[in-house]
Image 1 (tube, rainbow, N blue to C red):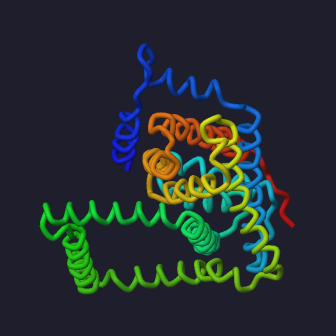
Image 2: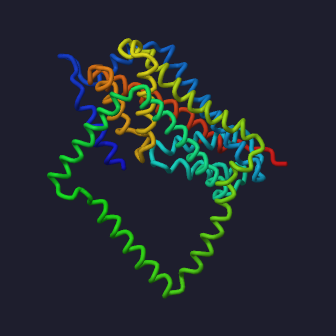
Image 3: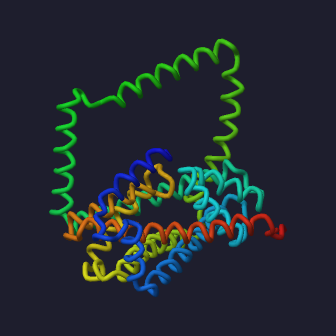
Length: 327
C-alpha cells in the first residue's frame, strides 16, 4: 500500500511544469503563499467540528446497547483512528475501538459493530453526493466515464482477457477450501468457530445498534451535518485560491465528491489517489491548468492531513492521561 501510494504521488507530481527558474517545491509553496489563509483556517475549524459531531454520533450509537461514554473519550478515539489511518490504511477503525476499550471498557467487537454501521451510513450519504454530482454535471461525468471505459477496453484488447484478478480470486477460494479441510481433520475448526461465534454476538450488538436508537432523528441530523461540513471544508479551501474561487458551488461539489472517493481507497490518508482524481476533475471539467490544479490539490490535501496530525497527536497524548469517571 505504501508502495502504491508513493507511485501515485510520484506519477501525479511529475506532471507539474514549474515556471523556468523555479523548482516544483517552490511552485507549490508559491501557491500556498498566495492563498487566503482565513478561508483555510476556517476550513480546518470545520474539519475539527465535523470530527466532533462524528464522536457525538458514535456516543449516540453506543448508548442503547448499554455504554454511556464521555464526549472526550469518543473524540479522542475518533481522532486516534484518523491519525493511525495516515500510516495504516483502515487500521484506524481498529485502533479507534481499542482506544475506546482502554478509556471506557467498551468491548472491541461491540464498538467495531457500531463503526461498521457508521461506515454503511456514510456510504449511503457518499452515494447521495455522487448522485447529485451526476445530476449537476451529467454531461461532463458521462464523458469522463466513456473515456475511462474506452481505455479499459483498449487495455483488455492488448492484454487478452484482462481478468487477472479472477485467477487470484479463484486461487484464494481453493486455498480457503484446503485450509478448511485441514482444520476440520485436525480438530482445530470447532474452537475457531466457537471463538468467531462469540465475537459475532458482540459485533452484532453494535452493528444493529442503529435500529435501537432512541433519537433516530438526531442520528440522521448528525450524519447529514457531518457530510455538509465536509463539503463546506472543500468549498472554503477553493475560496482561498484565485483560480478556484470563480468556479462556483458546482465545482466544489465535484471536487468534494472526487476527493471523498479518493479518501475511501485503501491508501494512507488517500495520498496518491487524491492527487490523481481531484486535479483530473479540475482540469477536465473546468479547464484549470493541470499544474495549477495539482498545486491546489497538494496544498488542500496537505492542510487536511496537517489538521489530522495535530489533533490526532493531541488525542493520542490526551488518551494517556484522561481518566473518565465511571458510575
